[in-house]
Amino acid sequence: MSWIFPVIAGFAAGMAGAMGLGGGFVLILYLTWTGISAPEVRAANLLFFIPTAFVSMLISMKSGLIDSSVIPYAAAAGSIGAVLGLLAGSALDAQALRYVFALLLIAVGVRELFHRKECEKARSADAPK
Image: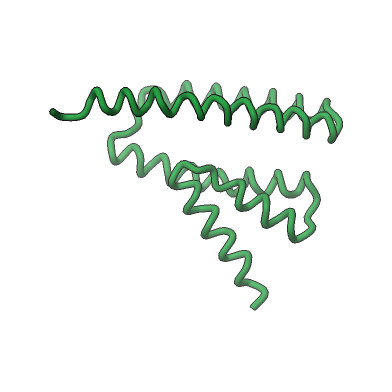
């Protein structure tokens, strides 16, 4: 029975990630709850993200939702961003990193509150009449 919770957490994280909701939050909560250290949680989350992102990308490409010509550029930019993020995260102490992350979450949340209205306006303008 010790395997049931990791399977449920992995399944929930995979489903959330496939829907574009960012399944890492489920995985991070679960792994933190089990008492794993923060660096190990981050590493596990990154390892989990690779196959999830790859499968989601393939399904999205098959559905025609991704322009395959931009993949090399997005992959290069993402790799550079990952290296810079790792360097910045290593340079900050844990408390400063928490504040930076909290500010980032607040900024994204505020943006999403106002961006939603723009998306709904665009969707209603494109709707068939």
